[in-house]
Length: 163
Image (cartoon, rainbow, N blue to C red):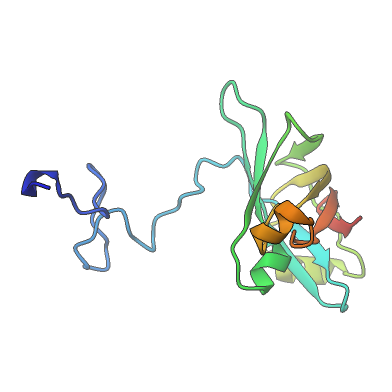
């Protein structure tokens, strides 16, 4: 391989240098990669052990494309994986109103909502039943179907419920 064929993999032409001063390009903690999203609804998810999580979804609508949502599976996240799920309105019924007020989460009051979500809930989101597609051990999945993440949920007005 000639020297001309070698390139540094972190350089992206035209990108700004990392403001932390590392001389890397395309790697900066201050960059917002979700700024093209039309909204970031906050979702309430009650775990089976009684603990609660607030999940953030990213909702996108590009011209000529179906509405789609990115969300990280909380079960995979707790197991040390970052499994990003993409759900689109071409395959699932999705309803999103970025201006709508988010109703009070189950067993919460208005004061708790304002404290946890000071800038609001990011709009009202509902999505038909979907499941995580993470295969923990792909060789078992192909043969027996045992190793798929068990997260199977529906989102109703920003509340995530197991199904």
